[in-house]
Image 1 (tube, one colour):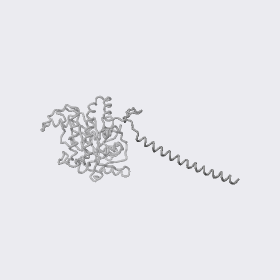
Image 2 (cartoon, one colour; image 1 turned 90 degrees about the horizontal axis):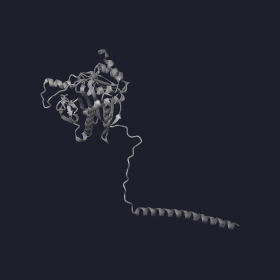
Image 3 (cartoon, one colour; image 1 turned 60 degrees about the vertical axis):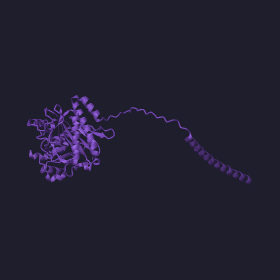
Image 4 (cartoon, one colour; image 1 turned 180 degrees about the horizontal axis):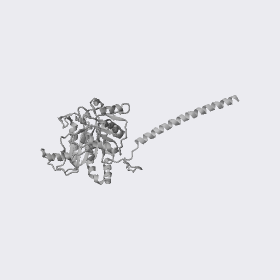
Length: 397
């Protein structure tokens, strides 16, 4: 009985061993078969390559963000009387694209230094000041809509066409903050558009204009209330065009891939109060007691943000709220910023966005220019913040 049990146990071990050995063999055979099949597939002739046709299918939700071109076309359909303004703004946008590319390559192309000339402000010009000025003059000339232009870089208003038969007057600072270019800090172009209420016929080749002709040129330049459009283009981490045609403020960002301005800030509204104030406090000792008292009241209440480029500081103020200020000082008793092509266009934008602008005692938009390069103190931003500053001047009224 015991032997028969041992024989059964031994037979089971043999069978079990054979079973294990059989499984290993099968795995080995499958692996060899897979390798042979892979080799055969690699050596087999392949059919000729056929290009797959890709069909474009309309998405359920098409893109709704308009380009500047599309936005202006739609705006003109709703406001046919502004067709000429559309053409004018399109040309300014093209000029801004050109300036943006030049600014980005300025360091590489050796254009970020000073030129050998002094402008009418008795300031040494930068190479980019001169280039940007020429780019904008060419852009305005191309439209055929502008007869007269005034620039920070020119001593007198310029005849853009042979005769003043055009509808508009353009004023501009071609490159605000150009002294910051070598440090790669934000710069920008500021522009304003007036209707030409006085038609002047002046020979473009006549360098010796008489008094009547000169008055005619100067009379074509008007206070901020007469602006029909204004804006700025900021050249920074992105290129942003912000403008108003008198019915709100809109911002477009340049897409570097398509080179199209795309709507990015629709109907900008500035908060009634903001968290920041933007003053160059290094000049505080040169300011009057009203401004110093106002700034003292902000300590511990608002944060200080100051870039030193008007376009950059106003852009931030428009988006976040607060107040931007460039007061008069002991060196510049009438202020530093120019009324026609800096203060008035920026004030127009801020008012269109629901903000407030002042020279401390009166609205900047009401100041009638007495000369092309007239300077004014500037305070603009959130309406309540500017009113607070004006209250410090109320004792003088």
